[in-house]
Image 1 (spheres, rainbow, N blue to C red):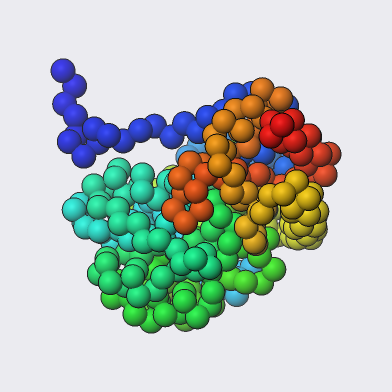
Image 2: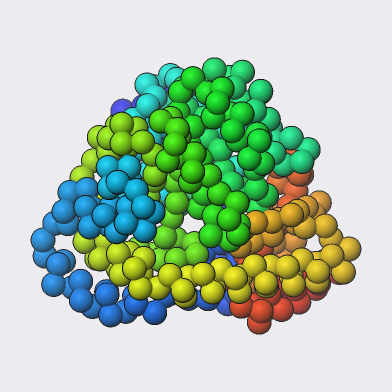
Length: 345
Ligand code: PMP
């Protein structure tokens, strides 16, 4: 008999329904491809492979700090922003503590809570998809998690509500900005710079087109970041990933910005096509659209039979059943629309 940790008994492995499909719009990655510097940087990094990376990714930390006009000590990095969020939870919460978060939100958050022995407390978003600051603060949790633009709704939080949360919080506020590059300036990095208790997390997996390399980062006060680095531990960013991320950050900014603009344009074109099908996608500041649709799980399965994979959700708080459709080059959107039309028939 393998001894089992009691709190792990009902933890599922992360396995969204997937099957190889010609068009995969299910994970909100950069469907326009990888940035131009990747290939050369990747090959140049091969010589680093036999040795360990530097412990806490100092080159990437330095490059991010320079691009943000921040001190390197205010930046932490990790194996995806998943790792940054998970490390922050470990850094500030003891097993048995509460993690409060907006609901719906990123599906991994309640899972990270369970893996760290925490009590997950979801707090429904308001009918306008904003954070309910009073209800979140009333949980008394030492760590509050916000996400803007939010996965899976795509909606952005208002500055007033986020500032209310930050002003009233007795502990740490994590603001997950995995999709900030699509939000045209609606971000909260300024709070990470000015408030000692705010950690903003970002990723190279979405707009930056490096999901397979697994690199994420966070910005916060040096005191806060020092605790996250302890929980993170060394060697979380591979030497190849660090080198490529540095190169893309310094050389490919224009490509990233242009593709994010393309994604936003395709998103709004997709919105008008979906609206003409009688659907009502939620407002989105991300590179995907959430489309409320009763029976979404069945519709998604039918779309997979037509070689198009989108993510379906059932009974989401305040939304109900819904499809989440990732946005990319228009021919992919046409394929998704064709599969959706046939599946709705
Ligand atoms: N936050 C949000 C809101 C996400 O949607 C995702 C990825 N789906 C992540 C964080 C994690 O991204 P990564 O670990 O690839 O940086």
